[in-house]
Amino acid sequence: MKKTSNLESKSYLDALGDLFEPQLVQEIADCPFVSVPAETVLRRADDASILHTPLVVEGSIKITRIDESGKEILMYFINENESCFLSIAASLNQNFSNIDALRAVTEAETKMFLLTDKQILRWNDQYKSWRAFVAALHNSRFVQFFSIIDQLAFKSVDVRLLEKLRELSRHDKEIHLTHQVLADYIGTVREVVSRLLKNLEATGRIKLGRGKIEVINL
Image (cartoon, rainbow, N blue to C red; front, top):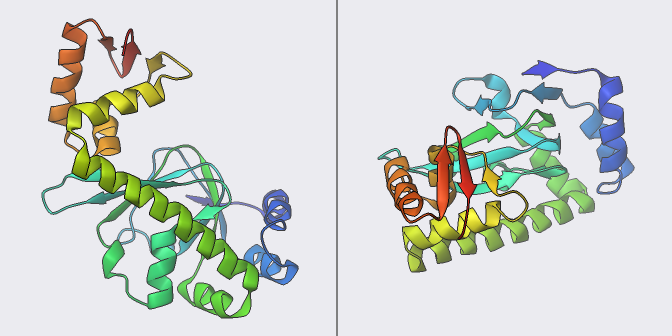
């Protein structure tokens, strides 16, 4: 993780002007602005800077949840001009126990402003645009959470895998993902995904390669 210049952050601040009042944008401009390489694991316990909440202006962060057995499930992505709803909620409630099991990994090189808990609390009281921003995040994430519940409660693993493969292959029949990433997407373990993929390959529906899956007929 490296800090970048104020000059580099200016163009991103201009874009944030469409979301927030000028005074709030100025406060964001005073926050640390960092660039994080792709596939960087962000851990709160390992790095004091991760005690901040990210406001992403370029790139993407994948948020997953890990249970006691080590099983990991995709929660959501933090994309451009978004933040981590669960981290914001924890800051507003001053209760961080609900995010202890979260794992954050950058999907690509990601640039972000780092916000403190105190700032989030004060902005929620002071700025109407910030409250609207948080409300929009709330609505978006809960739609995603209900989708996760529907998939896990009502669809078998093989159906979830087929649906994810169809989704990923809409624009490119060659999917470059590991079996572990696919397992994270659909809320299961890598061994199950590997076995199901081998079954699909045996029936001629896909072709497996090193770090890739070629879709033939799903």
